Amino acid sequence: MPHPKTAEKMMNSAGPIERALLPRLVHITEAAAIAAAYQMGRGDKMFADHVAVEAMRRMLNSLDMKGVIKIGEGERDEAPMLYIGEELGTGKGDILVDIAVDPLEGTNLASDGVPGAISVMAMSEPGGLFNGPDIYMDKIVVGPDVVRYEKNNPSEKIDLDAPVANNLQIVSKALRRSIDEIIVVILDRTRHQQKIKEIREAGARVKLITDGDLMPGIATSIRGSGVHVVMGTGGSGEAVLTAAAVKILGGNILARLVLPTVANGESKEIIAREMKEMIPRLRTMGIKENNMNDVLDINKLAPGKDVIFSATGITPGQLLREANLFGGGDARIHSISMGSSGVVQLTDTIYICDKEKTPIYL
Ligand code: VTB
Image (cartoon, rainbow, N blue to C red):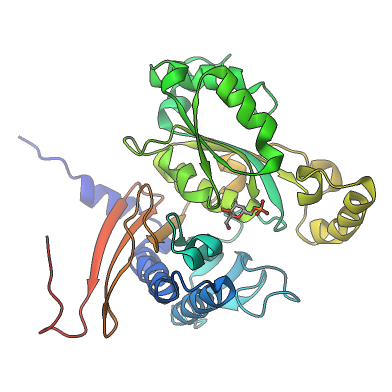
């Protein structure tokens, strides 16, 4: 009887970036997560972010590749490291990559020592990740069951402009459960008051989060995570990283750029000022002003064919356990990493510096 050759097939179908860099990627988010975990709960989010950025940057610079940051810590003038456009890697070899990073996603969560802080990054061939400004995006993230349902029922599609109840109706049919049993994760912000009301009125349950809408987005693609939909306006970089992961997992994200001043209901003058500053930035990124309102999906946000992704837990989360530090640098740390071939790894890494001291538990 022929046996399935799954692992062989997957490894053979993996692109050059996945082959060369996926095994290394997880150690990069682990390094940043260990650095941030050491600063966990110390109340200094800037410093926690700083050490995570430094660790991630050092690791990236040790890779044989020519990489460019597309989603990073900010524009060159505001971020000294991992800024948009920064070139990273040894430059050796012929691997070219675009990079999206968030060395510490949930700086408040880490500095407060509360759940949901992670270190996360993705890579692709050049042009494979959306090159956009670091503002907000209005998002809806759903898992593979919804994507399959939409394929089988082409007239029923999740739509950013549709009423919340209509989208939840589709999710409910796709998951074959009533709306009462659907859980929607959304950032707890004043700008979401109306949306939260509509979700509740439609009958769904809401999990409000103070920060970190990226991992819940990925959780929509993982059964048993207790997250069915993520909605609301959050970081655009987070949307691109979410897209990279959910594309591999078979889910989808719909997202549209929104100026923070617009989302947060600022005055016309303040909005106009932000727009004025934004226009030249949009141009350098190849986005025309009239395209700013385009709805982007996984194929626009993460069009790459050879995409790799890794996230490591810092504080406990829906999918990832917290980083455990045992003293002397020893650590146990939990990650999810994956590549376009379809390989998904949930890794429980133990770093042992002191073999006599550090126990390993099942
Ligand atoms: C968003 C969200 C992130 O910060 O960017 C949020 O996507 C910032 O939102 O996951 P506000 O400007 O409303 O505070 C996070 O929650 C954490 O980086």
